[in-house]
Length: 316
Image 1 (spheres, rainbow, N blue to C red):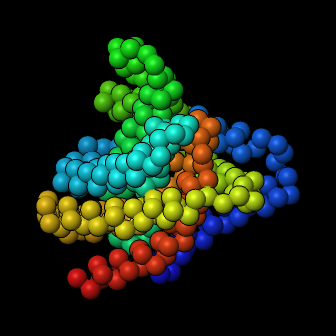
Image 2 (cartoon, rainbow, N blue to C red):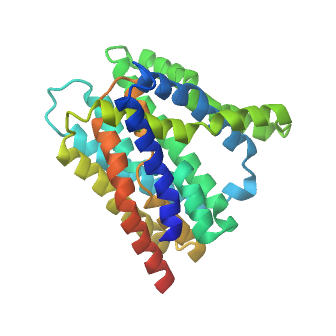
């Protein structure tokens, strides 16, 4: 419990700082969108670039874990997408709204919360699992959501034009091309110069604190209106119950991977929603109320759910 709280309290603290900053107008008008664009366009791409440039083959050569975690993540995303898609269709941004809701349901907070929590609970041997889960979530799942949003942005074009424009839009997006660039550097074997590594590390380190402060800013700005409780409950239920259940089924029942890796997969899938869905919604000027409140609610609930999972792991 102490290890879990030591990770969660700074998260709530940064959200609270953002909330107070907005109430006191410390950052001025437009701070929420400016800070969000900083994270999306600069800080997070730097973090993704560094992660893919430095990851070793040994760290990601665990196909059973990777396939199980990916399938559970994509299935949860698909369920979130479908639940929103089949709501009444006479509304704006139907496709992108469903994509962001699906992302909110399946986007585990592996980068900021998963790393310190898993290292504290399992030790340094958990690092490869966190790296794989982060690449699947922050690179793969995010790219799927961006592609769906771009499809809506370019609706009405021919199929060939649509595919070409979506592909070009993805390659121009820093969240897509930065991990690809990092992978290219990695495969080249040249390595990163010390100065470039330090630059990317300094910039990437700003990702999580800035994203969490941005959520606090947004919550203060929208405190007068409430997000649909049904939507928040739906995506939180998918994230905190369905995704861990699917992961457990795959790692223990289908793939039967090493118990240590299976336990790490279960904990990583049970993490609360990360900041990615909120940042994407704000970047494309879509509804962000559900994402912001789902992040806050799932993070609160994770104190109980992860404690229960750890108790179950200890008992087995």
